[in-house]
Length: 170
Image 1: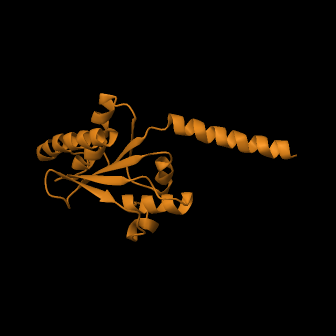
Image 2 (image 1 turned 135 degrees about the vertical axis):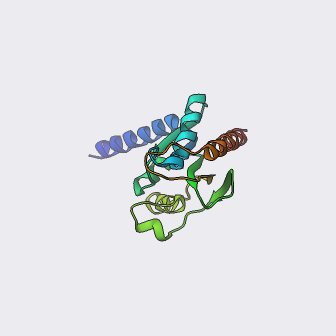
């Protein structure tokens, strides 16, 4: 009976080691609705980064952050959250994040800080260092393309994201 329990534990350990080998050190996680004008900025930035094929970088997108996204932080060394915002000066702002149980914690759409807090609650450990890249948006009209101003902000944000990735890799 001990050998069965031991074997099960070893398999779990082997799976964890394998996950660590296949999980990219850097996660870039963007959210937004590509069908709502400038809300597409986060997914567009991820699309541009994916096209570069940067080693050690995994990109994910979704329409909004949810509790389950805390699991995507497992095995990461750093995380860059990316979103469009009206609350940031043009073109964009990069700021560090800390886990926090905020008003979004119990709602359908969560903040990155709340996702980090869920990671703490579920994993029982400090989450990987995380930053938010907020890109200035102007228009969120349903069916509208991203605005020309927002596309210029996206170019600046992409350059900043590349510098952040390069600095983290150094």
